[in-house]
Length: 368
Image (cartoon, rainbow, N blue to C red):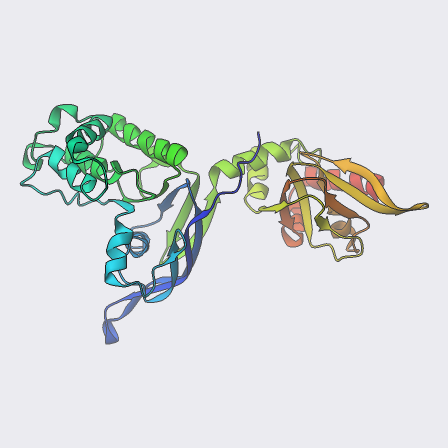
């Protein structure tokens, strides 16, 4: 199992605060929130009702003005964006909200066509494209029905078809499957996954629906206006698989591995770059996810490469455990991806996990 290549940033949120009301009635609902989401990721936002999830979603979608902080969508700053530019931005966003906002005078096909008409698709294909999208959400036989003749779940699926039909770069969804049965919900989730995988669409979903958690790349939890956790599900699974290859981690339980993996940060290096240098203060522990490194040390005949490390190997623990400077330089032989654990978290893991502590003690005899 290997890590995917780095992806460009799609959504970047930094220091966002938001208030409702004025004067004595003014109430803060978002507090200094920051988040980075990459292209093609599916991020699920969870948390209690009233925690600020939908407010944050509407700020990202330019449906509210940014009061404090910064939000960038595909590199475009939203704070202070002119109204005409906001309209243009929304054309690249697919919105799926609890209130489906369908036009009651139009059929399901016509509602979906409205979104297609904002693109440069040939006019002669509007109906065909709309029909194909309605078929994808299981409504081929309801294309000519108006909303009043559709069930709540069917109306929601029309709204979903309208949001997805143009394969937007960003999809913002608020409880998209709440009104859907199991099969319909699973079908919608499959469509979202296909858009993310095949078109690089970034998807943010606010939901309490545990049935769709398995589609997520990450789960972001909000409480009382604060982002309190950001769990990288698929990435954590990959890191755990890498950690299992390391002798020091092989005896750990899955929950212990997950706990450590979620605290690790990805770092990438190119050929010739030094990951650590001899003599520097030790501040991180490293596990190699992909690529190879040289360990360069002082010998009787001078400085030379004394060992080679590859995927699943680790380094940097001696300086942390002995509280000493680095005793060797580790240099990338080519492109290298590592996962690093801060000294604080590394030492906490040693103290908390007996098997880890035993393995680390043994390693000191061979590497000390």
